[in-house]
Image (cartoon, rainbow, N blue to C red; front, side):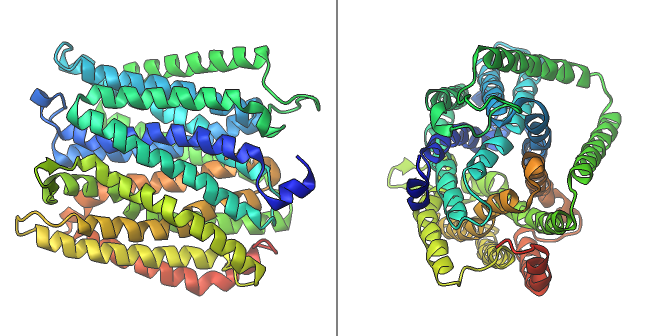
Length: 497
């Protein structure tokens, strides 16, 4: 594509990545919409019959690890495989995970409880490791198409984010409906099919990616992966599935207290290794200055996502248990409330994309820290409203679904201030040879946020603190802090907007 054409619009490869990510997110959000409902459903209805707190703890651990393993996937891509091969491996491994979850549901009446639980955990494990290979690398390939100060970069990530959320609509709509109304297994099976479509779409359109994401030291005339590359993709995929099986098997012999200690040690070792890689790869004072901004905003990012991810946990259960879902004689599936956020993304992301470009043309585009602060303030408003809904529901009456609709829409506006902007920020501020690893660090902040989202209700309950008012207050305070230190952050970005 010529430079002129590129400057006027976006490269075709962006739309290839858009569709690839869309089908992967179809899979993930379809599974996510079902997870807590599947775990709390009674055994006679094909679920696991878990208590609310136990289901939320599993949700916390799973969603936390889903965002933590991108550290590993980013490192593997940077050092050995390249981003493109790592994306393919992640897609295949996650497909296996979804089919394992489907098997745990289809065989709910024929397997003994222990075997069924093992199958379920095996499925979650492969989803965790596969996501770690897929997620950070497809995002950084998007960034590879643009220079750091290209005003189209934020616009490109908003378009890419639309792909994420189109998949997030289709997932709960189809997989959620199948799981709730037909069989949990068909919901997970359809999610697995989504991943197969994702991988084969990218393969079919691979030439549009030009030379971005190829393995290190690829020849100048190489544009697509060859037979040797695909042999390696298959070997890595099988190796990761078998390794996960072995880990899940051996984990069953470890006492719970020791398991908790090992998880903590593993987390510390992983972060220590990440810190070492970043330390060795960050060279100039300018790179260190920019890295400091990433670390600070990653810390604040945890606060937003600890609130936002109530969507798949407590707010999902609120939709099931406390919301009037009757529309005439038809009951709206609880999973469909998960569609409000991605629908709002599709409505507002193009508006935000145009807004940032027009604001930039007039030198009015807010710097990244300001956008983060605005996102926090919107989150605070959303959870203040959710607090009022919770107060009404405490009387035992079912509340109007409009409470959830309004909360999800406002949270979406906050999300648009943080998530696509954060992805774009990493590709601008990270040292060029560490982009995928630093993207893994950014995903680790999501991991922490997701984990806190799952355990927050039980922790606050011990101190008799209400969940939603607490989240509203901490988001408000965080937004104020970001505003206060914005001049320091802007200076540390060293000319990057």
